[in-house]
Amino acid sequence: MNHGRFYLLRLRNTSLPELLHRLRESCLIAAATSRADRFDRHLKQRASNRFDAGSLALPGLRTTLSADAANRLLSEKTLALNSTDTEIHRFEERWKSTVFSRIGQTDSVDIRAVWEPARLQDLMALLAYLSSGGREDSGEVRTLLKSSVLRWIADNPFLFGPHYISAMECALRIIVCCYCLKQPVLLPAQRASIAAIVFEQAWLVSKRLSLYSSVGNHTIAESVGLIFAGGMFRNTREGRKWIGTGVRLLDRELHHQVLDDGGPAEQSFNYHRFVLDLYWLAIDFLEMNNLHDCSDWRPRLTLGEAFLASFESGARLPAIGDSDDGYAIAPGVVPNRAHASADRPLRQTFLSSGYTILRTSTDAALVFDHGPLGMPPFHNHGHADALSVILTKENEEILVDPGTYRYNGEPEWRRYFKGTRAHNTVTIDGLDQAVQETSFIWSRPYKTRLARTSEQQGCAIVEALHDGYARLKHPVYHTRTVLLLSGKDFLIKDTFSGEGDHRFEVNFHLHPEAVAVCEGPWFSLQRGPATISVRLLDDDRLKLAGGQESPLLGWYSPAYGVKVESRVLTCAKKGRPGEISFAALICTGDDRPDVGRLAEMACQA
Image 1: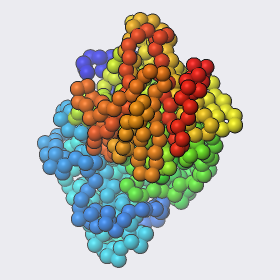
Image 2: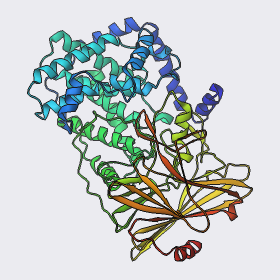
Image 3: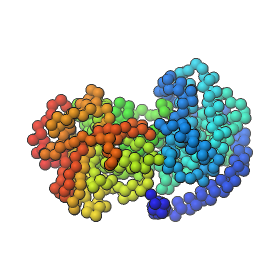
Image 4: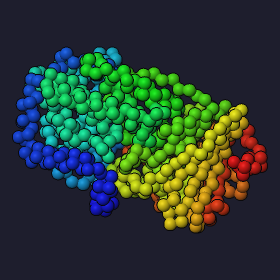
């Protein structure tokens, strides 16, 4: 993207208070980094002998880490998000002697993958496993913890290298360092070294908070990092200020990040899990150390837990929105969450976040996305997936959201996985429903509207529309109606209004493990024990595609940094909006319904 265009977008969404805030931040960081060595010594002196780890209580951790996983971590196989150690090490070596604010463009490497091992969360996973009684050789584990943290500090002097670029990364590392400070194997000088890096990173986080137009999950992580550091230095003026700042931001952001129906403002299920876990961790820490009464936070967070529980399928969340496989504490390690049992009614609509779940008598569930693009002003972690559907049966994902793949280094793939064509909705003229300006920033966001919902006697109807293509020279408006019939079959009808001639393409993306067999107009889809049938009504036919690179179509990302070929059921046709429609029938039972009767119902819907 043109740099001038980027800065124009930023300025357009920047208020005068934010502009002044960023100018102050820039001046302070410039002053600190211009004499980084001297500033490092100054902060270390302020931290010296002022921390209190002994009387500080830390939250207990629950883990599902296996013995094999623990052994891999003990062999120092650190978390690297499917990037090679060589690639990460090369990047770190290139920039390790450069002050973080002067590090150049990182397009050649995925900076998220570079940062992952430096979160030191592999150590938290080992600590949790150790505390669960999973190993008898606790001395070996604690020695590894000590040596790993001290080596990281030696290799990454304060303000130098890529690991100080993001305040959120510093905040997550603070949490790990606080747990390490409680380990009995540390000598006084080693304990002081770790306490100093906690103090320094907290200072940096406090000066570079994600506020105003940058508010989001980063803000939550930074707040929790400040609270942990503040607790460690709670007998100092700085520590008390950090606790106050963290609590104030968490209190303010709770009703911003968690919507009234418990859903995510960022329209990302992965980041919602991340945010909720950070809140639960902060609650335990604050209340255990009598630093703040968090009772007012619990009902909202429990609502968030109920939201996620409603969407879980086999303990897995849908890959809706961005996902970087990040964790508040570590993979396989969770804080003490409130238990929330999910209701499983026939139809469940979340008005604030914009999702409806329709459940069948055949143990299938369809999620209909009629929510906004993401959290304004930049909608960073949202995908252009308006009116998309996903479907599971017997806890097997069959029609899927293809995921994220990666954030940096491969812009064409980033655009694809965020874009409309990668989702189970209709793409018009090959364009996204909004405009991708950067790998994160969207402009021209669409608006969605839930037009009607009803249900009776095992049947339900949900209708929604969006205006993402109203920006075209000849505008188009898309309406999708989803009907649940006889408690087991879905009819999905797409209609359009507007002007001009356009190309309309409807896609249904299959999980890579789903086997598709063409049976005339029907496709039988099977994954494990689950089977469904899909077809279009009238004379339209779906065709099977996938693994295409020009243009990209038919790819799935099971984890961050990984992509595999998948199959797509697709149909495209050209015409004027009022003349074009699609009607897809999804049969989740053993018997296929009367197509003629359903065609009549589609015309009436």
